[in-house]
Length: 541
Image (spheres, one colour):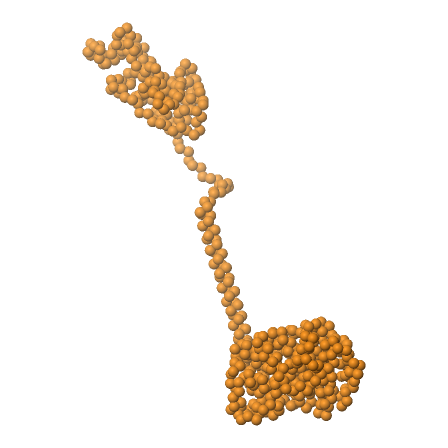
């Protein structure tokens, strides 16, 4: 075989090594390759005595099939290389022109610890098959002389490698070699139904979106509730307006059903000494029935002698009618310069000059109101009653103001005394005007100004001292005499007083004297003057 190839050629060297009796190469008994650290490595040929003969290599072992990233000893440096026949037969060109091996950087495992030595060096490589790790460990245990490849320290930047990289040729696995068992993939176990998975953290954007949706939902619910409440309130308002309209159509029923407004009179204690003197005057005149109500607006002290008793009102009922007129002016229902036409049904006897005028004459509303109080014109009063809607509407106002005994049943002059009121009701209506509860301040001033112009000064004004001012209204029919008003004293005090006396036609003068005497006693008492003993005298009929 050696003579067939030229001397010195590669083929002659190989053939001589094959035919050499000292080769000592033995084929492995089985396809299993030992897992020694030097298996499968090439050694460079070394000359012996100047002859170009190559020493017979160690028995070649077949490495196990591994992945590219798990070849043992791929990067371990060696001083010599082994070259086997199988390497040549698999790739003859590798003996002539060796190439640099393809190296790939294998990412270091996160669980790998770089500080281990010895057997722990095997951890530097990843073994996808756990059976291969058992075989490697068993092969090392069976052959203690097996050398393990040492880890090459990482080359620093700028340093040259001590030896060129060695290319490891691909090995051919014989047909009778046993293939390592392929591990079966484990089926993914489904989570047990009994256990709950850990709650996942919600991203802030998702959390904010959920809050936004929740807020929108709450806003929609609140809007729906508000709309329902608004609808209910509107329905109640409409019902109230309907009841008001029905009351205007039928004032008598409304007046009886309307609750009375609480009185604004703030009463503290009764004036005992003054009440005693008034009682003496009243009891010494048994033919007269007197009712007195007096209130000190500064202290709240009061005097009540039959003040709640209902009397025939006569012309004193014109005071609440005047208040109703200015209330309508404040509400815009009536204008002060509104022209009113005198009608035949308005004209009646009594005080005043309007009864002498021909029907069809026109008067302003303010002029009619002034004539009703200043000269107590009954014709003007009837025109005012018609302007304000009639007796039923006025009675409704009276009831709403808390006037329990004040009722208008007939037009003036009402000589039979069907229209009624009480001293307390008259004081109540004047007090509400003074407090500004029923009318505006401007209307209040006009009311008091008109009442100060009352021409009949024969009753309460007769008992007042010099410097006092009174705004009042008198009333007089055959069986009743009355006067009610507000008195301003020179010392700055203000009090309200109403005196009503029921009498027979023959006792009208004693009734006038009683009213004057009560006014004088009250004035001196509240003005701080001493009351003489002779004030308590019997009024002669």
